[in-house]
Image (tube, rainbow, N blue to C red):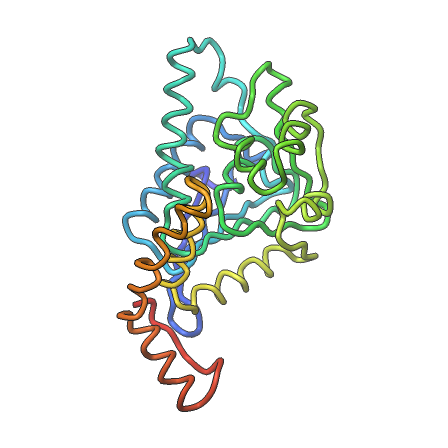
Length: 263
């Protein structure tokens, strides 16, 4: 276990694109106590202030995270509980979703409660074959309150979200892949996730951000709202260096040869 509960390391791909890797390292179980929540919020604030071209979230240790340290909930009033969740939405979930670049989550093992809810705020979730996932808040008489139920419903359907939360059962990676929650399963999920992070970082970053904007509009207002913003969001891409360079490359040397600067 490291001295700090998380680390945020920035590096570059072979093509020179910046990537950031946020690692949970709060062993032995990577529990989300207040120090862990504060560290993740600080890392996300750093990413929001200076976005790289792709982000990877991962964990050290045997488990991805065994969930929240129950001491965080001890003795809270209704008002204090409300403030807790509002702060976590404002400090972690919403700014993580709003990052203007692809965000990948790698789950190599057990991924419970807060960690799973954070994964659902990411763009793509990769898992190891032995990973298991759960929202087990019912064990302390609570419901998941960092956006897990609604984001799970978005990916898997409302019926499965209710089942997942109300039973508090653990679900394996293959089941969640079939449900559309996990995107891919890899034996070496850390290596696969890092490779995907590098691949996406080397891509047209502004176009990736536009994709996120359009999907976010659909999430908040349906197809009609997404249609309303698509023309302007996509239209702006025609003034980017990446689109202009890629069009020229396509015409001169064929598809798949363009390089991107993220501008």
